[in-house]
Figure 1 (cartoon, one colour):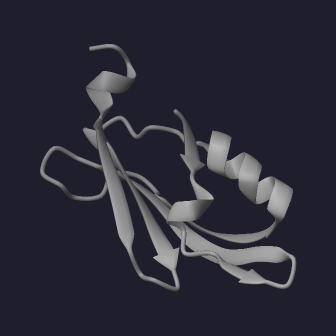
Figure 2 (tube, rainbow, N blue to C red):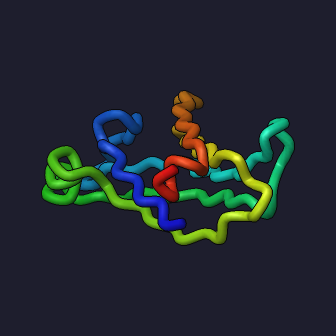
Figure 3 (cartoon, rainbow, N blue to C red):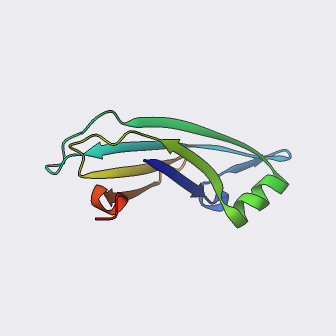
Length: 104
């Protein structure tokens, strides 16, 4: 499964420091079985931003891209994606049933 995220920089509480927009998010992806318990190995990745104004503006139009390919465990019923914003601590989540990934 390939996950493609596009994050808008204006929603990430980035701080302007000099001529750069700086900040970070934590992206967590986890597969779950039907009963909600973990299936397989998840992913946790911190993404740091150090954007020039032109890159910030482009990200505001098209999103800041993050992509990851993961193997779907056989017993997985869904994948949950969480993005936690530093330093605000705000969290956004998305849960996708696995059946929707393979067209069922």
